[in-house]
Length: 612
Image (cartoon, rainbow, N blue to C red):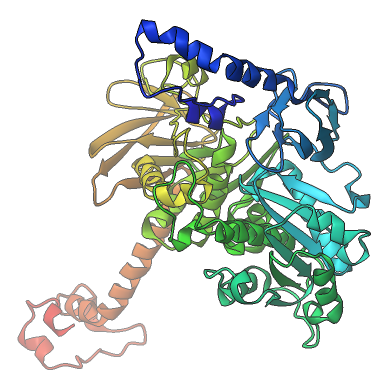
């Protein structure tokens, strides 16, 4: 129990072993108390050694659920009133305060055996960042310094910092970034970066798409693959403006000197060139965030967490820039503008994108928890790229609306099965007998509340189940008409209204007949036979259906005329022999002579179809 409380609450609970008896008898208790009395009281006094205070925003409102971390040890969370407290041993300490949507702040203090009261104010995220020499993002234990080495890199990193203000999927939970947009002009750069003890330093520049490793020997992680990193960079950033062959800023002596001046020889040092496309700043920023995620996974691969059984050796556990682009908000402009596989849906205060036919059935795919936002982004990217038959059938038969982020998203995972959480979904129902106009909803839980991290695997683990569910949703019949007002009635008399002339009816295997009404009057019957071989039918009624019938009729008439032209000679000879054309003479007075002798031999034969 104490392990769980230490990990998930603000409790600093410890277990004290006071003897060899797990269940001491009553007569042993007085001696146990006398042996440990002063030690316990001294331990209780430690609650008054450290720091406490209140975290507020720039408007003076308390900030709930903010993270308060020290250089080593347990993180604390502020209460709903913004309160925080942290027991600290005497000495120098550095506290970091961070909260979603607000700027990260640091505070240095000296503890001398007393309790300090330190209140702190966090500014709105992105405020005055254009002039800040250092920007902090994330609150994890793995620190990575990202340093811009030229003017274009400075713009890319400031754009990345702005995007990560409102999109926490940019960063892994264990990641903490020290972003230095203008590294060459930073004053006291050695002290600032050195004191952060970064595990890696990432130098960023525009120029040729490449990576440069500045570390050597054991400083380079064994699972780091330079070629794989460059392939990812070329895939996402290689389609734009080409760079000059001599454009290699990462190879300059200035960059090498900058990294030496940082005085972090134990950190893994690597640089990336992000291309020369001046209009791809947002994509380049997302690529940098993806590389940071990849570095975090590489640096911690061999670390065993509390919930680990053994270190992961699967390549799928390591982020790449390609995966980061697909799993963040940077993917949406790419899907809409560059690939054209989705289109923007304009709604106030919401960011949605649409894939599919634009006709029913409509499916809204929405993340209601912060942890699942990356899954929805990655799902949209996957559907855009996928050539799988099931995915193609889903897109050809239905419309998907992706809404990866919602206002006031839940930061924590919830178990919706317990009674205290059922109010969250009590308005959702599959009961078809209830008369209402609400959407059928299926809540999918993709991970356990206690699982540590795991965002990078959510889509891979749940893809078969989600694709199967969406495919099953298309089993039925789509009726599409030109009627402004209409309805459809099933065999038991239940009537459903058409929406913009269309309706999708989910059906199990079997044969069905429906009556279609237009403006309150009977229009036509519609039938469908659903089976595993043909699980989806579309019926177009009205203008489109009439046009199809007209085309069929015209085709049949043309075919009939062609047949008549082919056999016209046989018909004319037959009618002449029967005297239906008296005299057998034409208008010019000449008698017509048969061209074939066999015409007189067999007058009973009209047309020998075997000859034609």
